[in-house]
Length: 144
Image (cartoon, rainbow, N blue to C red; front, side, top):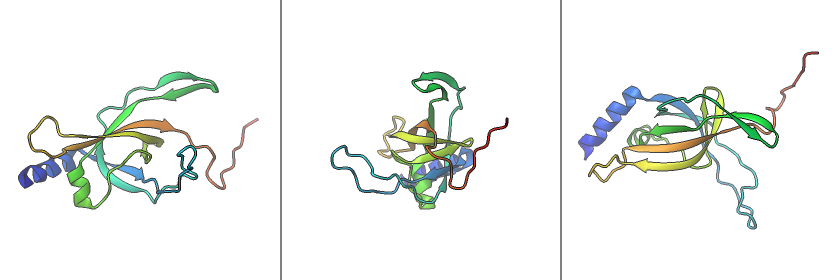
């Protein structure tokens, strides 16, 4: 089993690229609705991951106008994360890809049908998010 773990780490480290992850801090929950009172994130860290494709943007109609979105999946190696001593992204975390921030909406361990009884990949489903407020000190100007 250790042989397969080492091979898994070796192969994944060749093909994966660094991805920036913001880990969601544990916060008190609203007892009525079960929501976080304030979503705060830890300092960002990078973890090697793989994004199989970057599909084109889709135009969506929302009640506030039009928006652009694309569905993304990202793959991470549990063995490579354990070797680096970093946690895998979980639901609620934020991931930055091509200067856009994505919310981790689902996480799935995958073993690819082998009989090794170990997870070879950690797949997360991503949804694009938009900041609610500009960064502190940001001024927004419009050219006239």
